[in-house]
Image (tube, rainbow, N blue to C red; front, side, top):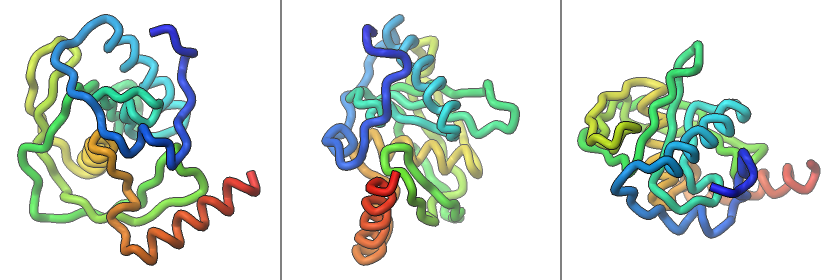
Length: 170
């Protein structure tokens, strides 16, 4: 990977955020280096997850670290949800791709995810609470979906107008 380290977040409405990501079938040194770069970017936000598309890289790669101490990042390639709990959890979500705004979103409290791990093996893992929220948020990014897509059209329009106003001031 020859891009600057770390790459900047692409600003909404950059097409990479809506295009979806290409599946990753095998783990290479380039993929591992990109995951490392994504963790640096995630920690610098600071945030609890990041999808490669947020950096303009159209690959189905995500990292999540909702641990208190940090340093527990889970690296995922081509993650997909196998099961989601019926019980919901609400959390205020935001994105470094759309600064100055956030919204409270309800998502399943627990999910089972299947993904290709850093060793190149298929893995299934259960995530609960903030971990589950972040994993779902990243999987949405990989599918070209943003957290504010869960809002009503009026609330979405208000949020985007607020973000635009914030961007012009900063």
